[in-house]
Amino acid sequence: MRKTLLYIAILALLGAGIYYMLPGGKDETPFDPKEAGFTVKDTGNIGRIFLVAADGESILVERTDSCWMVNKQYKALHSTLDLLLNTLVKQTPLYPVTKNAYDNAVKTMSTHGIKVELYDRAGKKMKVFYVGGTAVNNTGTNMLMEGASTPYVVESPGFVGYLTPRYATKLRDWRDRTVFNFPADEIQSVQIQYADKPENSFTAARNAEGVVALTVAPSQIPAGQPLNDKRAEMYFRFFGKVNCEGYLNGLEDNDTTIKTAPKHSSIEVVTKKGKRQHVDIYWMAVNKRSKNQKQSDIDDHPGEYDSDRLYAVMNDYKDTVMIQQLVFANILRKAKEFYIKDVPKPTPTQAQSEFRTGASTR
Image (tube, rainbow, N blue to C red; front, side, top):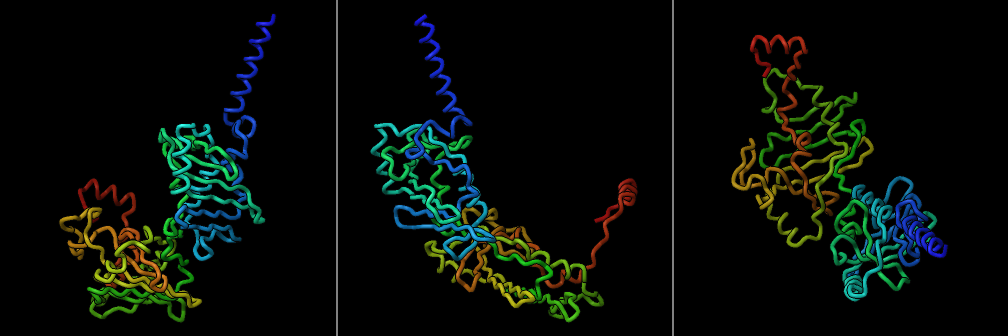
């Protein structure tokens, strides 16, 4: 009888342990939240995030009525913010750092760690913890709650690696990368000027009737060919949600690189309310990342420059960014392209007939 009761007690303890350890058990983990409360289930209640690295570099991310702002100046990049919030929801403590790893974990945290402060929408502090480096097995991250005595190894289920890079403290990782984001009906004019081939430049602007008209070099207008109104009107639609690839501010030799790079073009957009966005674009020399390291097979593209990327300077010359030619392809058009007549697409019946007879529509 005593043995039976002992077995029942052991099974009960095992069951309770499994209940606590499995997702959905009592709260999230069997650990004291004061020691290992790294998980934030309701990120919708977060109003402010403050991240500061051991070297003093810091980021303040705040929720406003319309968006999240970074350092009270810039809109936050959605992908960086979403990744961090998703990490806060999923990150789970696995076990306390072992005695053998304790000294190294604490030392790394003090020299290279990141302090994380979370506040709710009312400004009340929710929790503070420190993010260190990778755990000994390289599948978790060392973290320490403020006021706790023991660091824990923390993981995000389904992710192999360490979480520290998700707590980025560099401004260029947090800033929204918008170059242009104007609804077509709010644009008054767009001016494109090409430095090396000015004959391709043009200005598209709405006239008194609100119709988009072009100002171009007479040499670019084919004899007797009228403006393609459909193309001119559609052109303004290309200025919504146009982003750069990343910011180059603060990188070593950045200013020298831009000063020595030949200019490609400039773009200026003016809205009906008078808001302006001016962007100067420069060629990027071929580098190790370039697909065309030896030569370019693209029309009008100098072989010594990257065929995929360009430099750009914007926001009153405060920001230097990298842009992709593919993203800007619809914006960087040539003046003569607005005077080309569109060829109507064949109907399905016509296409079948032409296919049977061997005719070509191209």
